[in-house]
Image 1: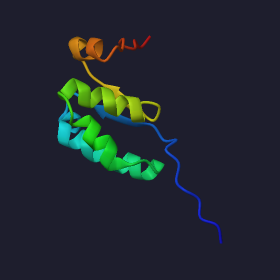
Image 2 (image 1 turned 120 degrees about the horizontal axis):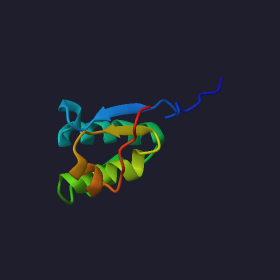
Image 3 (image 1 turned 90 degrees about the horizontal axis):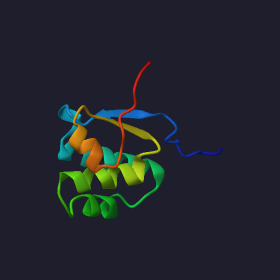
Image 4 (image 1 turned 180 degrees about the vertical axis):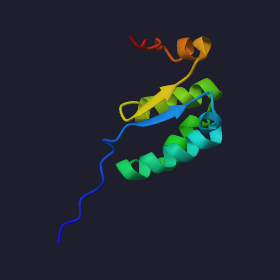
Length: 89
């Protein structure tokens, strides 16, 4: 029998303006995603908590941004993260 690691190909959407966007929820999501990807979750969480909220989100985005969409209506947060808003046509 062969066992295959589950991939992170599914896109997760996190609303940074809602309850899932608070620091504790982002840390819990990072722990789960890191374990799924075989990454060191403790190292990532220590890095995430070594600064303010913007640093936490930037770190989360750096590790998991290819598999997670972060949503916000806060232009200052988007600017701080170096992101521009996507527009829907």
